[in-house]
Image 1 (cartoon, rainbow, N blue to C red):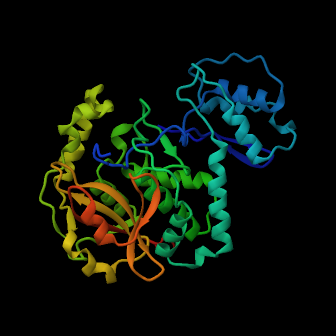
Image 2: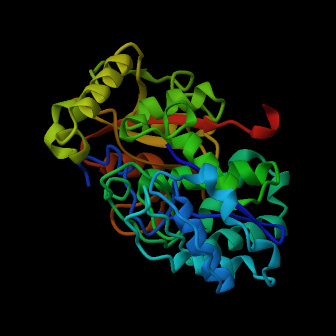
Image 3: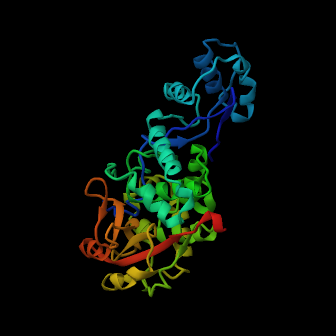
Length: 370
């Protein structure tokens, strides 16, 4: 369970944050601690933070069991703080040392704020909020061209952490991040913390992080859950998709490939239960040789996942429909080849993906129309 820790400091809301084919089940499911991880912090860290900002300390007895609920008592000195900028505050948070008194380490990466602020500035200058949600998605995706691809990011930590990064991506993190930013811009919400909230909503079952099993590991599950919350709509069937007719059990059948399931029987059984629920749903896909025939029905910003013939798995990669300058439809994605890039033609790209049989398509729902 994550807890957001906010401190009122001269009107600033301070939030402490940290952060190839196995198959890309997702290329999607992993993110390193170079990003932001929103986590629980103890009262002792609050006292240490106050000392970092004020240079003063107070002799208080703190036990390891004191958590955020007792944190306000640590704000004894904050009303007398000199003015400090948000960027300076982040630098202070980033300097916090590791401590055995924390349930989870909280690490802020000030360098990740810059790309977000740059995108926000661009969005305001271009009045992106006046465009359709799909156009916003493509415009935001453009801002990350050339950012490096990094596989296996979310699973590097032993415990589930809410990680957000704007400096490198796997294929799903790219889609999630662009979608979350675009949804905020559509309603002129430029707050970074709300971006973090939206990513959590998109990534986890019922929109809340609650351990490894709460992550939406299968793309079909990701679509189903986000469709329930009106974040996206699965349009594969209406585009002429056909049933995949396969049992999704790749994770349980390859337990040894997932450290979290190897060491925890309860987590393994939870994944088995999720797969059983998925068996009750029909997964449709558009065969590769039919993709070009639906170009006229696709829109920039549509989410595309590469359907696969790998046993037990639904998709191996994902990206976003991209309208090139000449009108041709391609795919912008965090490519395992090395960086965020644009494949000029969608169908031609899918043909070159190993084990690909077609695509699954989900369309972002405009939050202004909900």
